[in-house]
Length: 312
Image 1 (cartoon, rainbow, N blue to C red):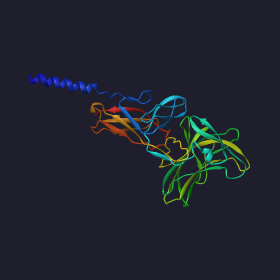
Image 2 (cartoon, rainbow, N blue to C red):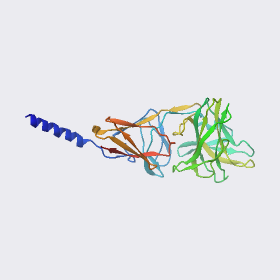
Image 3 (cartoon, rainbow, N blue to C red):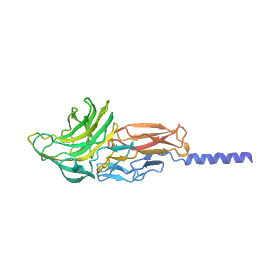
Image 4 (cartoon, one colour):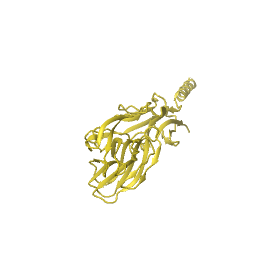
């Protein structure tokens, strides 16, 4: 009898082992695999199948697309505050800002710059003190006026020598990137893309009294021109996170988390595969699940496409 009972116990354990689902997780599938748990207390931006930027409900991790092709889901993001309060109310910044236009789901505006100097739209913020800050905005190349886009000037009041860490543009629809040219005063984006997000990061070692974002056009002083600009964002940290809509005051988006389950504790690790061709291995260490760390790349430039379980 004791031998018979031991045999039954062995068969039961074998059944649990073979029942653990360690198949690959396809994050390009429309339905999120039940072995993954996503959490975010805020709505958050994603790129839908039609190419528009939309906002998902809290705790929903939607599938994202490039040129209509499913590519995966964006990495979990750190908490971020958009300290630029002029997004939906961008017209409050300057008389140069005219009517609004919904472009790919983003609130952009027609900005008409007259002849002469000072072709910029000032956006003061509540940021002060030392630190690293990332500035970004969206725009469209204007074929009619041949305007060259420019990310503008991150003006740091109260200090003389901030460090401009990086400057580049991201194509809104394809995710392609291009390095911008210039110095601290003006970073020229030239005509890399028809639609773009310009990004720069600035570091300040000493306390500043205020950080101001200036969105500019590079038409010459003897010319006038119209350009479509908008969605200014200034946030603490080294990356540009997903768009955060403001309307008269700073807005904070909660952090998000991604947890991958370890079915039956049968896997030793999981390999996460990204759309940039890289992958990273995360060990379960005998636990029921493992958390994927927050993104260290700008939003819209890298996605998670697949997860592979590994056994020793």
